[in-house]
Length: 128
Image (cartoon, rainbow, N blue to C red; front, side, top):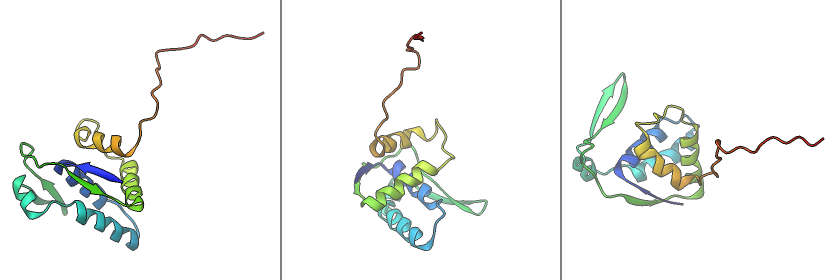
């Protein structure tokens, strides 16, 4: 599976994967994905990335006015499944704040289900 990710998607996906709870084997697999999508030192400097400790947890902030070109990443089927599971099970997204980075990732990973027009109804007919 190939995914093209910008720096914001990479940083948020890295954080989301880092919040997963799992057994040691799964954690190692998650670390491998995180290591691959992590920004390198030059990329961190280019977006003015800073790490802060807030309530004992690391928080990453960067300058949203700065950007890096998107990069393509290839993931194995098990890695793709792990990424999909992390995205599907996270329950703390903000509909507005996460949409910019999350919507393109969801569209790439999950084909859209057919839309149902809730305003179009079929009249009820009783056969007697």
